[in-house]
Length: 74
Image (cartoon, rainbow, N blue to C red):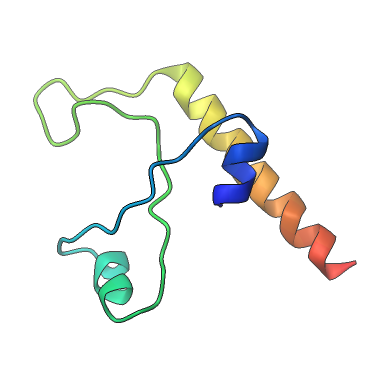
């Protein structure tokens, strides 16, 4: 995920997170689980929103991840 983001000119902030999600629990147990962005702002707040441009960029990240896995299968 990080390599795909960097290829698209996005420099992710990589830090472990804690919380009640399955991914956080698995990360705590030693299995890295990337928490990919959605491009949203003000999460869990009254004014939570996601700009269309951010959704588009997230889609581009997912496509790039798929391309990288496809290249590994060749």
